[in-house]
Length: 163
Image (cartoon, rainbow, N blue to C red; front, side, top):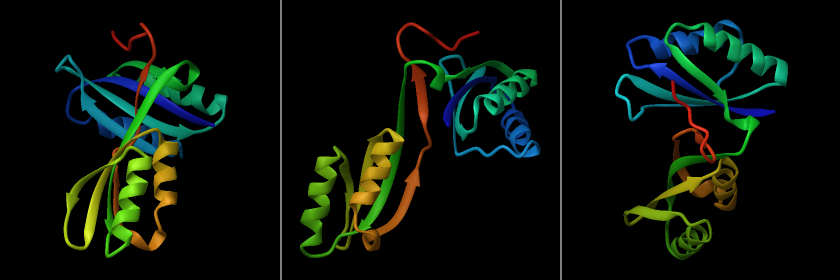
């Protein structure tokens, strides 16, 4: 099962390296990883997705909590949450295919953010499933390059990840 784990860490050199090292030492895979500062400049929020059963996720959570830099760990998948991912995708856009690509982007509420005579660069934000669906909807031979941010997530309602 896919889990979205949100970790509040002290914003200091080496913290990310130690956290990622914990995963690699135990043979756990990180599917996506997103790190950015929070409203408090001394803290960063790290959001990662990984796959595993409840026992594996419990072990990951316990190990993360043992790290000195880690302030708090929450498995967002355990409750109601909002998740988004951002993707920039560069596609070959020639002749009549230009209109079809634009229609597909409109259906998925994506935006064309750059146009050249032969390419479109499209921005799309949404769940991982939506982004995967957009990629599937485009002809495979039109995709030139894909850049994805990884999942960002936040709990719904008044539940907050703070100290």
